[in-house]
Length: 540
Image (cartoon, rainbow, N blue to C red; front, side, top):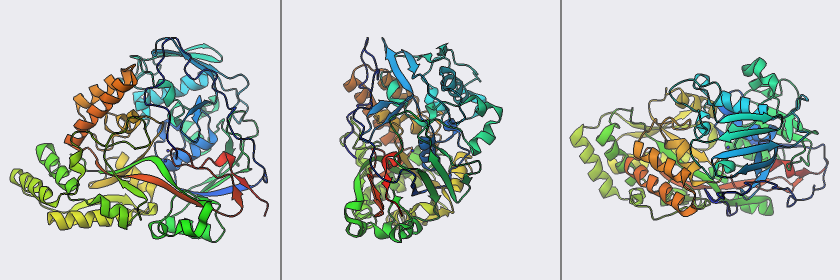
């Protein structure tokens, strides 16, 4: 949906006989700050790819909205630590069967109670094969989930009573509770099932905000949210609502911030990266975030299948001077990638065997390209698709030029006007070029950077990569009850990724943002998203 160091390991919640997340309180939450409690906070965003259904939203434009209008079992604080939201307790004796109890008196904004059934029905819908939800992968661990046949009700989900349900996994997985703050696990009211597509245009949530009115989502323009006065969780809004504006370019959003027409921006255009901190001073931020950037070259493209494809991907990777691009294009606000995850996640390592494929080595690049040509002579051009509204042109052009110069082939960028159009072309497998990809962590875990993107059949596996050995190592890592054992499996899985390069790692992002003079208490979270609910704004 993306800082300070995250203190929750990928699988550090294992403890037989312990209460996982039970009794997690909000006692450390800051006191409600002062300000105009009716003031609307304006910020930048992007048009969601799809109607706002939690299990069918796996991109940042829609995710930013969903996280504001829904509340899951837990949420993550600024440092990525889990805090109970709708959950009163999440208990397990064996890390395989979890008993989840919902807090009493929780409601959706239409007055319906938030019950165990609200979660179970939404999860079953999201997991069912026939419903083709983009985030169905997130239910794979639950007993009864299937990629091969439609399962309307997973055997591993059981409603015990109105406020209690039980989740049985296929194997012990100690980090399961840590995932439950992600939007795929949000509940849905009964009203959603009357017409789910229509619901997605005017969703009814249970979070700190709600849609201002029916039709508040003005497509390709903005969405208007107001405070949900009935929300009882730890993310109580200190303001009157959010206006999320869908800008065509980052430069346009930045200009509005400079002109006092926008309160908060969470992405600085390349043209201002070297100057924005001087301009905004203590109203700016540059901090590490759980964000990984790459581009995918699907093996379905000509010359990129099999052994030839492996050679060409490795050649392209060696042709890229990541240090130069992060310094010149991004003014040092990005860090060249050393793996497929993020340095802010526990278990990160720069010493995984095979990582040398990320080193800039023009001679090796040419050697590998010629080896591939011996199998099948190269013809045509190499293009990298990207969305023009996201500030990507400069780096895409730089990468393409490096590939062109080092390998002696025609290479260019291939822009799409909007993020929604770009993502739809990828989801529909209509795109016939390489394409830029990025991953903002859903929850603070090494596995979250790996399994959703590269595991066979995963919803965000845009290149349709499949390697049974990788899949098994991921399953072994998730099933490990020892933290270090799990990390070791995830690192071994990355060794396979370095051989196959289903994505070509580029760099890790920082969150670069700024805000206007009228707002205070602005804090950016572990995943780069501002904690909008705690922002205050002075009266006009």
